[in-house]
Length: 314
Ligand code: FES
Image (cartoon, rainbow, N blue to C red; front, side, top):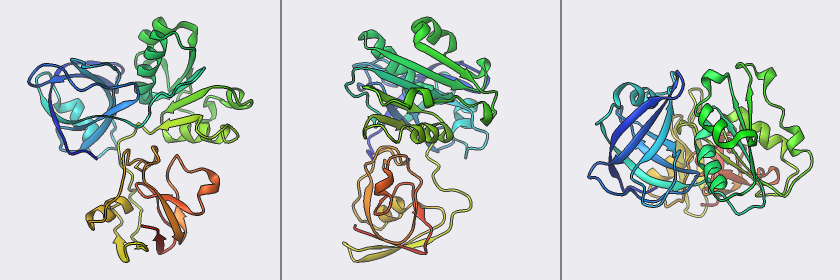
C-alpha cells in the first residue's frame, strides 16, 4: 500500500437515501487531483481516525473533485458513522490517492451488477460506457426505492439499460441471476455489492471462462471477525514461524515481522496476495480463488486457518 497522502477539503455533501450520503472532496490547496478511472477507490482517514476505502463515483483526468458515497454502518467500528456525523463542509481529510483494483477491461459487451452501496463503481463504469457508446446493461439490487442511491439519475441516464430489483430485505426475494448466466456469453461482468450477492453471482457463473466475471468488495476492510482464533504460520522459504493473533490477518502479521509481501485490495478481491499453501487446512474467505486452486493456494489478506498451523511458501 502506498503511504503517500493528499489533503482534501469537503466541499459539499447531500443525502442520497436515509442511510447513504454523498461527499465531494477537492484538493485542500486547490488545483487538480490525480487522475482516476472507473472502478478506482480512495482510502480516507475518517474523522474517527479509522481508514476506510470508498469507490469513486466520478472519473476523469486531473479532476477538480472526487465524489464518494458513504453508507452509515451502525455495526462498523466508527469509520462511516464519523463521516456522517463529523465530516461537514470545510472539514479537511487525508486520503490515499486512487487505486484501481476493479478496472474495466476491453469487452464487446458488459453486464454491470450492483447491490446497495456497491452501486458507486458501477455507476461510474456505466457513465463511461455510455459516453463511449459501448453496449452494457445494469442490474441494480436494493431493499426498496427509498434505499436506492442515484435512482432517478440512473433511470434518466440509462433508461431500459437499467434493471432495478427491490427485495424488501428478504433473502427469499433476492434477484435470480441464473437466466443471465446459464449460457456463457461474449460479455464481461462487473459485480459490486454485499457478500451474499457476490457469492450468488460467483456461484451461477462458475462455468464461464476464467477472467470474465470481476468482483469488488465495497465493504470497509474489516476482515477479522469477533470469533476468530489465533494460529501458527510457518514460512518455509524464509525459515520463520509466526503466530497470527485472533485480531490480525496473516498479511498484517507477516508485514509486522518485516517479511516483504505484496498486496493491494486487502479484502480478498484483487488476487495480488495469492500465496502457495504447502500444508494445513485453510479457511478461505476470498472472492478470487478458483475451486481447483483452493487446495494449494491462499489469499493471505483475508483467509485464515481451520487447522492449528499453516505452512506457506513465503
Ligand atoms: S491483497 Fe487483494 S486479494 Fe489479497
